[in-house]
Image (cartoon, rainbow, N blue to C red; front, side):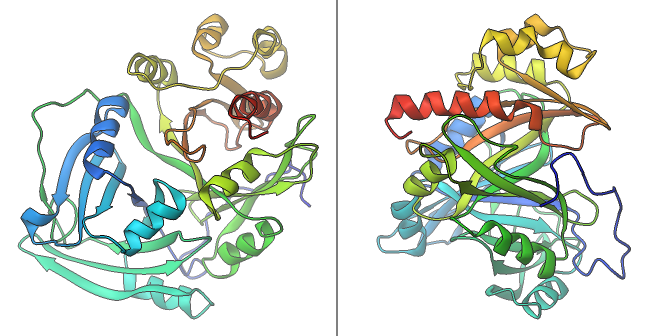
Length: 378
């Protein structure tokens, strides 16, 4: 296995090699038990703004969706209006969780053709959707667990979100907190499946392995995991794939799978240009984050060298720091935002670093284990 410190050289695949060019993350859709309340949470707690709505008032009879956005981050919260639906069964099995990771492409038909001919299981055949704002073409494929990728081609569309949605405005709005875009999304998969899904992203979607970690890199006294980070040609899409590794006690990956009942999206990392300001505001709004001991900060500068931020400020907020040969990064991880200990968020600021905070793994995982112990799931 490639050593975690040996990142592959940075390169952008040429157009003729990159058979699946991706412009970025288009949206992330969550299937939830109460979309209206979930949308309110992301607006008031995370500073997302109301964008679009679809439901009974727009002609939908089986579901309702609220769309919220902050800069380039777009979340769709969807709830079933009927019993015994795919949406309802997803929520019953997993709790609230990510169903769709939508990717913005120039050609949704070609994206579908290129991936399915390489072995992807079809989820949505290419279809053209129109309204007075123009047209969108979407297609989709299955990935790990019940998660799917939808390819979105929207060059000829200028509506609020997608055809069938109307502009949604609310009286009560909160100010944004400085979140810019999705940095990466982490998938937790079952025992022995990391290499299977890394191969899927490499062979079916043309991704490269950016970095890998084994149980020597990501372990504590009690638990361990392994991870491979897959990225597309321009590195706008980064998907770390985690699987459990043998340890004395149950790892966070095992806990996730136990409660999510399958493989799925464990956390979404959101980029900010000012993590101190963003995290300060998030904490003021009630978002809870994992904390590490004081000793972490006593040793911080010896480990990472000079940084722009004040260490006492970082300690007060619980922000972690790590450095690689390209620069350093700052990161912090929320506690789970759902009743089940499944989905959480990472807030990250990159100052050159392309890595994922290997130097923070031990302290972070010990913090997660303290939470697991309090839940009785370690």
